[in-house]
Image (cartoon, rainbow, N blue to C red; front, top):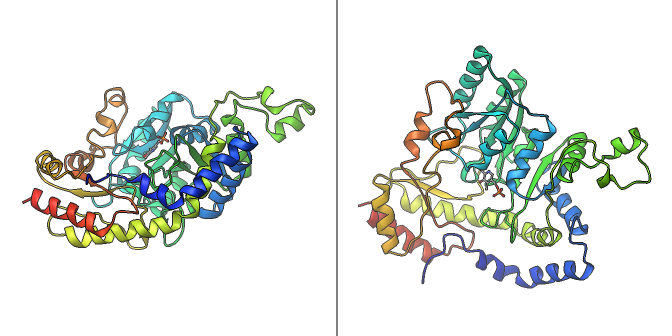
Length: 387
Ligand SMILES: *Cc1c(COP(=O)(O)O)cnc(C)c1O
């Protein structure tokens, strides 16, 4: 039988009845836009990670753009982010005319290297062409970035911190979620993410009620907030027809929220199941491949990906294909090497670790329902493919 890279049907089989009923309830009540399930889901998301507030939105890319809009990012502003990430992390910055500045990664975790971040901020400050404004750290492959050190650097330079947790929602350091350090945590509910829905979706978390109100306004065309309504004596009119700022249309569908409520209920259990799969992979592959994933002490990954390093990656992939083992490369071309992003600056000294790792990383099938027999087939195929 063909092996799935991510088996969403196995999860569906577990909660199928509850999912079907949840969707049917929404079709029955008919409040498809910002219905009661959206509010209920936002509450559950906050409870899950200890954030005060959650603002859902249309996808994980808008979830990154909305806080930058709320902070008034504009041309001449610099936003520091890794180059070794999915496009969306960097893409939202030029939307606002601001400039991404690409940072190198730690060779063991593939997450933002705080030393490279610090050097890049200092260089931008000394050149004086761009104004440092914010940092977007990424929880790549599900592992939290080094938030304690990154937050300390952000505080020292007066920068806002976004945790791009599209791959990492649910990850922790010493039991604490990224919201402990970040001004906002963003995530994506793209189906293949650890917490995914059956379409597009995203969310932003914050502990600041004023920030929440601003995000809520911006996701609905810059509609008037409670405060705007009171200040402008707008009472009696519908907030969405009163637009004191320029926003966008980015909402989580009620049907998706209903699905996510059911998936969130089993999410903690699924993280444990992923952890078990990853541990077993590590035991069976360590010493056979150039590197197995490293997770820091006290760090909990949610294992969006299980990524090893190999030499001669193309040959290995080809041999694995012959064994019907699907693989993927995240990411073959880092952002600083992509055409439209080449004009933006990188950390001083370039990005040597990013440039090395892009040629070696290889992600194997990973999901909570990967049974031991299938795992053994994959491990055997990998061991023989790297020989
Ligand atoms: C998937 C992803 C996003 C974007 O999420 P979408 O919901 O697809 O817009 C942003 N950042 C990272 C790191 C991602 O992996």
